[in-house]
Length: 311
Image (cartoon, rainbow, N blue to C red; front, side, top):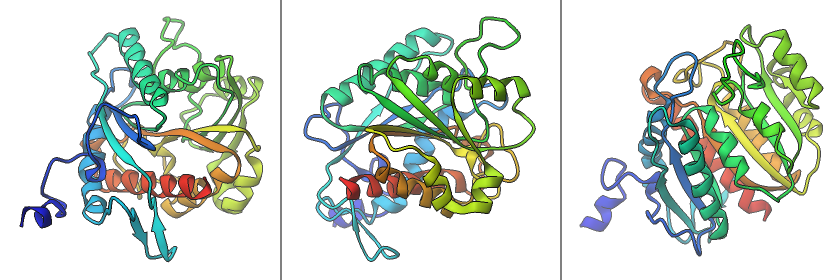
């Protein structure tokens, strides 16, 4: 009886998709790790609750998970993640106001996952966490594909020395010696100053606006993404339209649909080996019917399925 109850969405310990929890990534293909931080947000706080909300939403899919077969995707007509070993690594312990210490902890956790041979799937948390995640890939050449309403390329705010916030992780990533090309998809709205736009272009970023992506489609977007040996992907959930993902700190109208983003993600493994990805800025305090958390959980599974199908 208990075995059947464990399959129900509302029953059991809510790890991501009911994957087993362990801090030992050895032997795993994927390790899901949460970073519950929102201390660097410049608008609405609450993203620290994102990892927990995404895990809770993922129980819907976890109730259909088979450790051997993975998940059956009726649209694809096949199982995804068949034979893939997936774990929930748990959360990085975040201490409020201690930004540098927290970033060190994030880098250390991702390094442990990489050393164990697993692909890290990081759940945020605000977007600042992505810099210490990418920093853990030191010595490995990376291209970065960044989905976001905002370019996150501000160097500093009002010359106050605010170098690490959710408004500048891509700027900080661009300064890492092992990072090559950066492609930014979904930019739109009135909250990116011209100076930040120009700074991203000077740094060599390829910028695809939301309006272009929507009008020209996923195949056109994928043509604009250069082929690379290794690719890291960062997804700010506000790249989606607020009608699809209202639960985020800085929403802007006119974003991508779930289907468009899922189709672009599905094609990225053809551009290079995806070595890790994150989904950040889910803010359940502003979510409607847990919609944003559910979309985030589904996108994570869609993308994992595409990554391991390509491998």
